[in-house]
Image 1 (cartoon, helix red, strand yellow):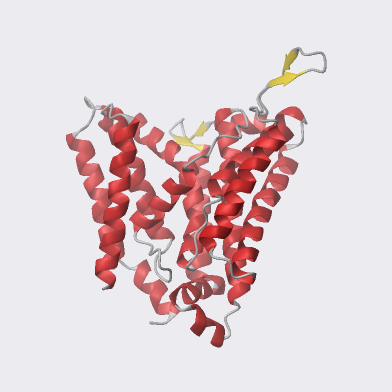
Image 2 (cartoon, helix red, strand yellow):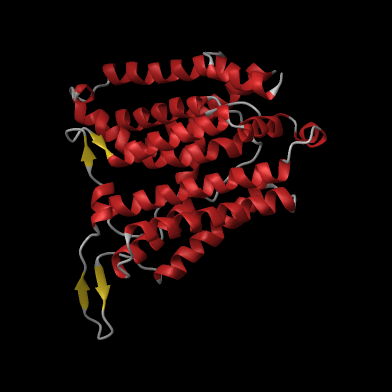
Length: 333
């Protein structure tokens, strides 16, 4: 199967898409049954669910091309924390203009992703090891930049007293809702990034190269595909999406926490895998990732409105991930 045929097969309602749709339908059915005394039928529940999954969804959009190319990026949660600290410091403490803050933060995220991609593609280090190292490095850099403390509106003066700054208008905008208060700005950003990622992966030549590289890297090299640059760009996209998620996280929390984002990479990877994108590479897409994002999002929301403890939620999510991967393996065989 050629890369173009591969893309078309996943844009249609093929087996992975059908399984992802069934999984989402099952979640919605469970929500109807276990509705938390009618909470599931309220508009606010769905609005809040979309808002809560938006940051994870942005990460998942960046992870999809990396996983389709046959790689993995474990650093996105730490890059999110680093960018959240940078965004809070620039916008709150240094009073930088919003445009300059965004550009600088995007550069930080893209640089982290580029380094991971360079180590993976050029130096041929395993993606797991390369991004694990970046995960630790970015988390340490976030703690160093913040002095190990949250970057909030409380600013320490030289004499030991505190002064309080206002929340930047840019942060308030990102944390607001539009369309009559029914849709969060962060949700719109997530949908915009999903649309852009879909166009890049399904319509652009880079997307075809991503599928070819993930399907058979050696054959792609012999076919003239610039595998190194394709992989590096995939990691840059992942780092950039992590930067956007970090900005949104800082705006929602109104602070930059160096400890935020811990475990986010695992949730985002779970969303991609449950959607049907193969960890072996070469198969998947943004449409499937969106289904995975909604499935995990509604699963968490249903468990939340039914007062299921966090420990139970984590164990159930882990079991679902294993089931999804086993299903992929059996279908492949």
